[in-house]
Amino acid sequence: MIFLFMLLLLIEKFLPWLEAHHLGFFRVLTREQDPFRQVIAVMISFVLCILLGPPVIRWLRWQKIGDIPSFDQAKLDELMKSKKGTPTMGGVFVLASVILSTLLLADVRNFHVQMALLCIVWLGAVGMTDDWLKQTVGRRNGNRQGLTSLEKILLQIGLGVLLSYFTFQHGQHVEDAHTLFFPFFKNLKIPLNCAGFVILGTMVLTGASNAVNLTDGLDGLAAGIMAIVSFSFMVLALIAGQLLVAKKLLMPHVNYSEEMAVIAAAMTGSCLGFLWFNCNPAKVFMGDTGSLALGGLIGYIAMVIRQEFMLFFVGGIFVLEALSVMLQVSYFKYTRRRFGEGRRIFLCSPLHHHFQRKGWTESQVVVRFWLVSAMLAAMALATVKLR
Image (cartoon, rainbow, N blue to C red; front, top):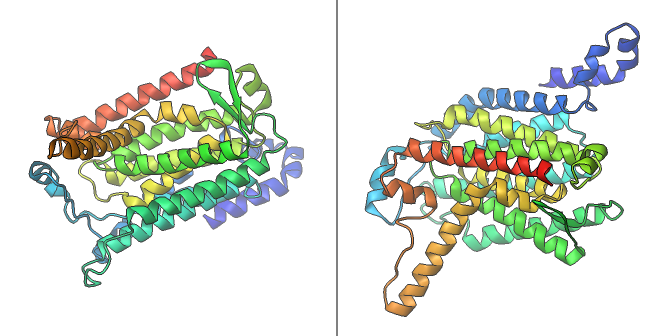
């Protein structure tokens, strides 16, 4: 990795000499080349994940950081018992791959890149703390069962407010940076003041982070869907960063947001690399370490390129998973107060467990959710031209 980084720096420094000696084809390796940088980011992050995976999994096993599936339904416990002891916290090498690829190929002087790195490190640390406390509770005499829900949500909201506020201030003189755009409707735009921008940004970042976390319950489910969503936002970020293309397609243009495409590409490659180990039967789980950070990061990318509603559409599976939990919990509490006993809308939540209880095999649930996610992504990208 260090050798590759030095090679890219040397090519950028001596590019005029290389072009003068008919070696200009090396230009494709410089940081100014889009979309070649994004393609390279997918490849490098994928390879990094494949290389980092085995030693990290061995370390997790040595530390006995294994999953202990526990649900409030005996039937679901029976369905998931084969996963007991599988190493979790595998998001460590997913995030490492994203960060290394970003440092290598993105412009780290770019404000949005710096904020994205803060986002992934912050939420990765929150998830890692939660995973570590939960998985090592036995050796610590059971004195702490992970972070509380309140602690996690406050840390997510705190990050959301911080990133939203500074992103708003950074885009003061950018035409589209403070406007809310809607899919399908080319003339429907809502200008946002600082308060509106911060509230929306915080909701998107926090909501995406938790939605991905709730989806991470079956082998390959969250990683596969995140790869699809990340690839879609790589395309959208490339459009947003190119003035002529964005204006032609009536899409928001944000200066230098093509750097977000590099990060989205790194996420795509890392998720595909993680699937190498996470496909059924999984050798490792992402844990909160990966799911919280990846969800928050895709939320931040959507905020930067002004495509919050597109994330709601492309990440439709994530939205449904989160809604299923909110509806289930709310309805259960309501019926318990009203009728004296709690009732359920779904057989189990999140939604993927409902379909398991309906008789779908784990592989059927995962692949079918992938297919729905791919179709949503295709439809979302098609709306770019429809506008």
